[in-house]
Structures are given as structure tokens and as C-alpha cells.
Image (cartoon, rainbow, N blue to C red; front, side):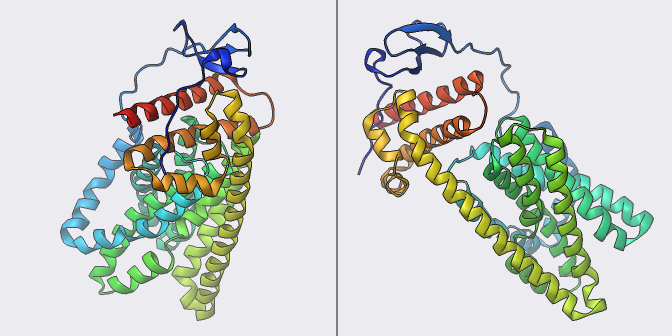
Length: 386
């Protein structure tokens, strides 16, 4: 099965909607169904970014601060680096699966991962060392670590909001997951390096990488859910974010306390903490699956309306209006075509989410997303002709 990507319909035959401006005065001009209007998408004067989308100044600074101990561990215990990367193969596919309805740009996901890996670990490491030196290891593990680590991961999610990449609850969970995964990977480097010195590398690897690889993503998911809800509702970000952050810190502190001191009290404490983690994992998994199914159904429902508004061809509606059929079509495409297909899907999904939000639709945001959709479709045509 193959898919042909068509250019937007001829304005004279197209329904009312945004279409490429035939005069070239603006990216898009509103066609009312019978004639062009004076309503245009005014291009904004934006400076060309100095860094690629997957990088930022905080990430570069964090990488410089973190690189010393990472290189040292890689030199002394190279196996710690190899084993520390294992959770990516476990957690990564789950995050990709969650992100299938409204896929985020890979550059944004990579940035979130790097934020957790370098920015969050660097700042958290410094603070935890200072608290440990002043108040002792226990205060560092149960008080400062949950607080500063969750705050720094929350800032990674906020950075996605600042870049206008996060627009709903599922996005919040996805960015929380990638940020937390990056943090967990680099933290594992440190733990595995220390465990090797004590002759416990395999035991610690099984516990952290195989049995509980979702701990950090599960803690930070509460912050992501809270921030995502605030963005989706258009309400103030800070009050909602603080509520989610408090839950994340509480779960993190309870886990650290049980893991560090539970055995000294009773083995049942450790088993209870592990059972809590399992229950939390399945509760979050079931909730996210329901959310994903709901978003999936809403996307499919909105496709015909979006196609009419943005002048898409009839065969494109047939592809995207049935979720299982869409996945089959995508699977049948060559790698290059699949990239263009994903671009159209992502733009459609973001437009669907935009129009599904309460209140008036922001024209500037709609213009930008409509431009992405048109660009992805035209690239598909060029790719198919090449």
C-alpha cells in the first residue's frame, strides 16, 4: 500500500479555511469559500536560533559540569556506563508508545533527556553534596535529594512549556518521562561505579535497572500531569505545578527512605515500599492508557473537520480518520516517506488539540500549526517525486 501526498486543494474549489497566500504577502490567507479575504497570517520577526533545537545554554553548562565525573567513571568502570544505559531500552519504548497520538518532535524529546541527564544531575549533585556535608547522608537522601531533584526535573518540563512544545496532560507525562529518564541514566552511572568498588555491581544493576527502571519517571509524572492540565485549561501554571511537584517529592522521599533505612527497621518496610512502587506503576499505567485511548478517539473524530478547514485531500482523510488503518499505512511506507507521514500526523494532532481546548483559538498559534501541516504535506509530495 502506498500513499500519495497531494498539495492543498485549489482555493476556488476548497472550503473556507487557511490556505497559502497566492500573492505571497503572508504564509497564509483566509479563504471564505468563495473569495480571498484580508485576513492573513502575519509572519513574526524571529531571530534564527543560535543552537539546534535539541540543545540549550543550560544543557551545555550542565554537560560541562557533569562530564568530569562521567569520564572518570567511564575510565575506572566502563561497565557502569554500559549498564547505566539499559533503562533507555526499557523506558524509552514506553514513552514513544505514549506519544503516538500527538508525537512530539524528536529534538524536543532529546532536549528533555539531556536536561535531566546534565542540568538536573549537575545541580542536584552539588546541592546534595553540600547538604550531606553539613547535615549528614540521611538528610541528603531523604530531604534534599527528593526536593532538589524533583525541582530540577520540573524545570525541564517547564522549559518545554516555555518553548511552546507542551500543550496537554499527555505531553506533560511524556516530557516528565524523558527528563526523568535522562536523570536516572546518569545517576545510574554513579551508583554502578560505587557498587563496583563494593563488589555489588550485579545486585545493584538488577535492582535499579531491571526491577525499578520506572522510579524516576513515575515520581516526576505527577509534576508532568499537573503542568499539562494547567496548560490544557489555560490556567495559571504555578499553583498546579506546585501541587504536582509536592506529590512527586513525597513519593520520592518515601521511596528513598524505605530503600535506605527500611532494612534497619524491618524487611517488611522494604517489601512494602516495593509493593507501593508496583501499585503506583500499574495505577499510572492504567490511567495513561485510558488517557491515550481518549485522545486517540478524539483525534479520529476531528480529522474530517480538520481536513475540510485546511483543504486536505479526500484520500488523506481516509488514512487518518481510522487509527488502526493509519498505523498500517505508516508501516507500509518506506523510511523517508514515513518521516513525512509522521510530520503530517504530528501537525494534524496539534491542530486537533488546539481546537479541542476551551475558549477561543489563538490565531497566531493556528497559523503556525497550519503552516507546519502545509509544509509537511508539500515535503511529502517532493519526497514522493524524488
